[in-house]
Image 1 (tube, rainbow, N blue to C red):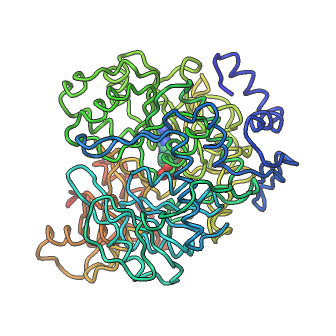
Image 2 (cartoon, rainbow, N blue to C red):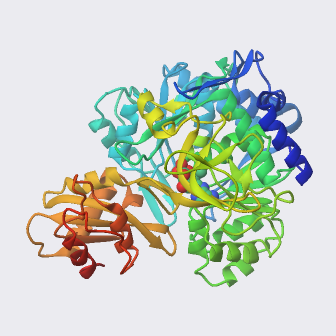
Length: 630
Ligand code: WT7
């Protein structure tokens, strides 16, 4: 499964295009199936519908766990590093993880969870989060992990959308110096939940906080597993049975519950993990993401465990107790592959270099980034200081919807190059297209990025909304549209230039502007608002809101705080706006559409070159907004 030379890459790539079924069938044969598939791929772009390994039956946890017990039973599967370096780490061997997952799977069954039920997981980065995910998969329940930084409202929306039957949470969590309450947020969410679908809440005691336990609904984790068997027959799943739902922001409306299914996701996450990180048996791999995001699903839990790797889970933050924490952990465990976000690198670059130099990073073989473009300065710093000038960087491009890494370089095979993510992995067929949806051939080329052939881990739908799935991703012909713009150079490398829709990537988090504007607009003093992104040194992009008020404001500073407080409460702190400018109007077209293009330029500090604004309904407003720009 592992590509070692550029010749192999070229050969495999050719084969994957000429005979995709043969290519994927061979890879799929390396897994443990309860029943072999009948057909490798059936698809229809128009419907749209994609079926991989139809007729095949399996359980993904047998491939993550049982399959490794003979040879790797005593090898560490998960190494958990706590927030507080003074607290002891926890190491779960494959055998221990297998038992804990089986035990908790049985506990879930005992609480009435059945195949196909949705289970919401709202846990901090502790081993029980990975155990919960796998326990759901063991019994065929569909997990929906919600990042534990989301507000009660956001949590409620997600619980309701998927009508979850059970919520798994903790009393609270530790992040840096802070202790966060989680159970109280779940309580609030269940109070405002409109469906009332949740029957049980299982609560892990992480921080010894006082929490209210609702009789009949809430159960402590330790009670839920008391007297439960640590062997659990894995449920038989069809290849196309949903494995999980994971919410991501859309450019409009409520978050999209992206659906991933079992067989294709299993194969693609393993294949991409092994190739991109060139993982060798015995290596220690660390991805710093949170399991609340797709990166954590695919490259902390599933990919590494499917590959029989040792994966590190870190509970804390990069700057606690100081900004050397990441490097201290790399030294402590002799990490071989390290995978993080550009925003973390940009933040850590600002600290004295002694915080890096204090640690031995010579174990590193591959260092990676994900989530947003990595600017050249950060890339060069990363390569020089973390990679000792020689360790290959993988700048991996992918999305919640793609399930796994699609465009990247491959260590020692395809060389890294700053500001370019790289080439497609074999099996992935990217294309660029123009405004009229026509494919752009050759190089240099720039356009919208799409994938023109199905791949095994592509999203199979949006929960409860097939129409939106079709509209969002399949409106430009027989291809999957990514929402990103990209350019291609003479080496056939792709540079991702950013979103071409109203999604803004802030610190690697995918934020839709519409839901944040909705929150701002509910403030009694607000008439209308528009949010755009502007370049930010550390966050990549930050949010700039233009807000029209009813009448004058006495204390803009107080109103700024009030609005951001409301955003934090209704959505989550990551969606707060760095700048809020109060304006008398917004530039609009004659049909009433806000001209975001102009606002983006104003927010980025441009003073000229606003294009033709004479067709606006209110061209005079542009001058006015520039005059009072923040
Ligand atoms: C969006 C997807 C994939 C896991 C984390 C984000 C941006 C992602 C890169 C990269 C430039 C990137 C894209 C994409 N993005 N990786 N290496 N270079 N941009 O998943 O939250 O679904 O966001 O992140 O704009 O569309 P996500």
